[in-house]
Length: 295
Ligand SMILES: NC(=O)C1=CN([C@@H]2O[C@H](COP(=O)(O)OP(=O)(O)OC[C@H]3O[C@@H](n4cnc5c(N)ncnc54)[C@H](OP(=O)(O)O)[C@@H]3O)[C@@H](O)[C@H]2O)C=CC1
Ligand SMILES: O=C(O)[C@@H]1CCC=N1
Image (cartoon, rainbow, N blue to C red; front, side, top):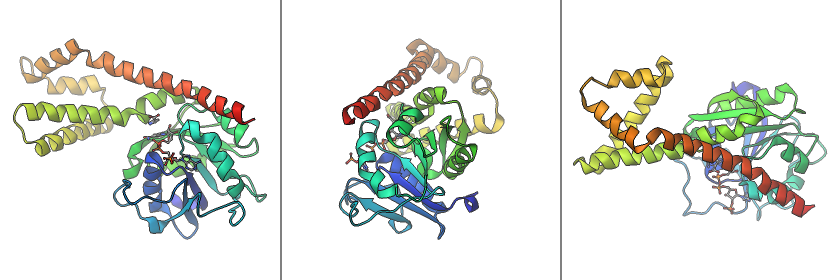
């Protein structure tokens, strides 16, 4: 897989997801494939970094150690820029980093993982010449377990989408989907890990309430979520079929399911995905407004 990737992969924005991608991608770094990360500031000692992140496998650029005057790193067609900043910081990040990376050598692939930001806006503000791919990964990229969904802009030749897929294949599983599904993907698998952490925490609290030690309760809740997810993935059974296999007639599980139905677990999770998808779609306006003010 990694033999087809070469050049530079530049991650702009070294926050939560930027660090996760850097941690995942450092494993495919070679003499021919450099991973460059860019943020406003130098790494701060008190910051949280993913376990195993190795700064020696990365080149780190900050506002203070690179300036347009003293360094430019013109990227070519075989290089890739991945924007990992918040939508409201996209315009500022283009202003700051475009002069560093866009010389006259070529047009790198530009990947945006910004929630809610259409490829058309990336073209409009960054470049109409560069190929543009939009991707929604998730935080499990840190351990090569991301669910990532990709789409290319209509102007982008297919082989660039294939390159983007190779990059995200290195940090988990990937799917290709039409761009109009990316907000729904964001509400489901982009934000989804947060919902599952809440589920794990609440299950563990239930165990603690019933007398289990906290650490054991967290480990059991985690393994239960992992095992249940793996069973769906490996058997490809509908989740309802697997749920029925746990639900012994007159047993414990059906009593709990009755309680979950009364409390509205399913409508609650459906609403969570819907509201996060709608919020994602609304973020395009934030970027549009920033672009309008800049022009
Ligand atoms: N977190 C997640 O699980 C996922 C996030 N995303 C998307 O990724 C993007 C980032 O999210 P997240 O990592 O959570 O946010 P964070 O705030 O954790 O990270 C953003 C990082 O970008 C930095 N930054 C801001 N402006 C610039 C700039 N001009 N140049 C370089 N770096 C800059 C920020 O620095 P500073 O702190 O100084 O502002 C910060 O370190 C968002 O668009 C989000 O929609 C997509 C999928 C999953
Ligand atoms: O919360 C957010 O906006 C980002 C997008 C998906 C996950 N985190």
